[in-house]
Length: 183
Image (cartoon, rainbow, N blue to C red; front, side, top):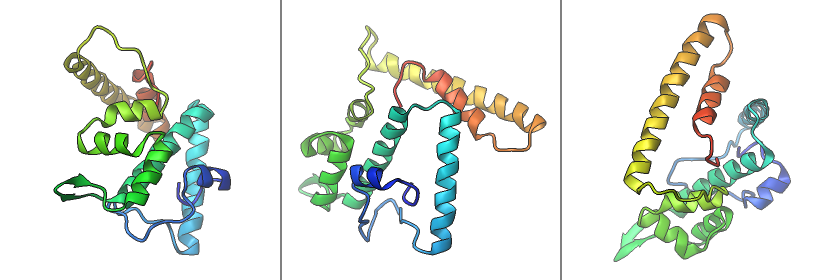
C-alpha cells in the first residue's frame, strides 16, 4: 500500500511523509527494487479485490483503516499519569483518516471501544438487534470459525486442482460469512 497508492489517495490518507519511527515496525520501501516489488504486489492486490467484487467504497474503507493503523503506529503510546499518544500530531492524522475526533480515538484505543469507531469509519453502522454484546460475540466467533473451516476446505480442494494462490478462495469465504457487515 505504501508503494502503490495513487497520488490522490496518498493525499486523502495523509501518506506523503512518513515518520521515522513506527511502533508497529511498518517502514515504507526505500530501495528502487523494493518499491517496484511492492508496487507490483499492490497492483496484484487491486486486481484480486476487483475479481472478488470489492466495490470502490469498500476498497477505500480498507485503505482508510490501514492508513489509520499506520498513523496510530507512528503516534505510539505511553503512560504518564494516564495513557496517551506519544505523538499528538500522528494521533490527530489517524483520527482524521478514520473520520473521528481525537478524543474519540483516544477513548477507542485506550478504553477499548475500537469496534464502534471502526464500524463508523468504514460505514458499518448496522442497526442493533435484540441480542446482547455477549450473544453477538458468540455469533461472531461462530461465524469466523465457520469461515475458517470453509476456507480450509476450499483451499484444500483448490490446491488439489489448481497451482495458483488460494487467497481469492479464502477471501470469498470470508466475504460469504460477513454478509451484512461492511468491511
